[in-house]
Image (cartoon, rainbow, N blue to C red; front, side):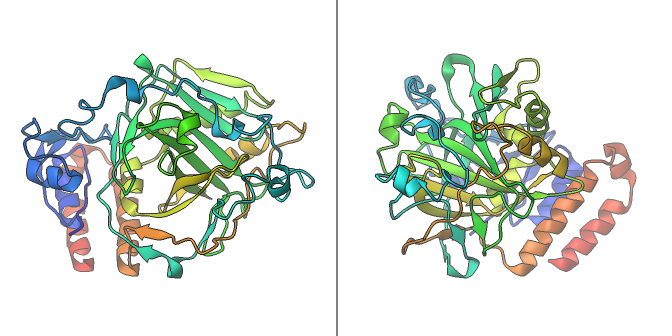
Length: 403
């Protein structure tokens, strides 16, 4: 069956989460040791893999799985030598979002690709998705601090590229992905008002911003080859909502503070002293990965709109402040005007199936939201105060009654 994988720093937190989770684990200082049999079964690794236990500190978002990725040759996880942002794979590397040259014109301007039958983004209707079960995602080195991060105004969006030692990339696998995928880059789409901006819509609703984390299958030598294969490119999509008290990651905030310095096309800020790992782009990446997602086969959302892209649209909505969105909207694009609607509208589904993993019913959804709020509160309370306070016991009683 399904089980919750949640990690926390303190034994108090372990007690709290153990009651909420389906499975109960023992605490070991600042880590939880997962039984080998459970981990090996969950991630389909051989039982004779080395290692007597798996520790997962709260500060790390990856699982140190026996034999992974040590058994992956070093050369295949290096950054592709032909890298350029996937949006630059158009004929000229430049495309627009204007009324006369925007997404509505792309099927004619780039007729070989942008007029295909499996285009992205799409509208996702909850009552039309097909549930399916996959092993949980495994991420490796998403917590690794890079040498630096480049935050770039590409002329039509904001791009983030990372530089790691030995040119090796963080990895992600499982979650229904057909192989091991390496991180390529991150970019954003947004709207001029907070009622629009996301590329994917849920039940017809638009959100103010969407982030795409692009990955490439390690079995291919370069991006050009991967773009031509049905299992070559996987994009992870994260949708944002406006919050007056946003829960955002340190890296996300550092990125936003750099946006004001890249107002013009092709300007870049390089974060050397404040380089942040990928997981810091999220308030809680582990929670987002566990919350559930939609999966379908589509295309790049920018020219040349290459198809056969594996899309994962995560259900847990991320937070962003209105002031941060205004920073994005203040960047100027290639047409010498602010970038305010750099998103492609939903494309026809054309009979494609959208799958759903991690379906939450109403009760579990309410509990999940409540748990996040309680966790946010508990993280602000000093540990010595929390351990001597009756607050935790009262919370546990009430949560037990809810479940």
